[in-house]
Length: 151
Image (cartoon, rainbow, N blue to C red; front, top):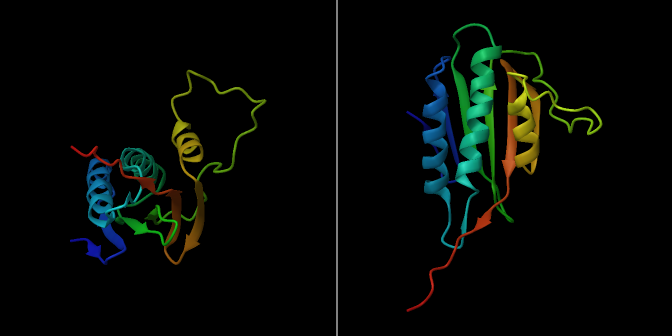
């Protein structure tokens, strides 16, 4: 059962690949539940994509079967959201800073695109140590809701 407040959601996910679609659905639900009448909390499609990348990385790159924790938080003015994925691995994720534009990306590379997506599509991202491992996070800005034309 997720821990829910007016401005945040916190839920533990299984340390399996089944956590990825669960996390996507939870993020969409959380952002729908916490958006206001004048603006959406954030672009939920982008939030789902980036969350799926973080959860998949946590499952693939951390040992053990300890649950992964997903935190979705609505940010104060000017709005937006921050999404964190907590796992038990103490090692920092790959490079969350912008890559060197002079170094070409290998189009045949099977891994490594998730963090590139997070860097490219979020307004900010990073990681921090926690008491039980680390948290990897990203933020997205609020987006204005589209008004329906008057009849």
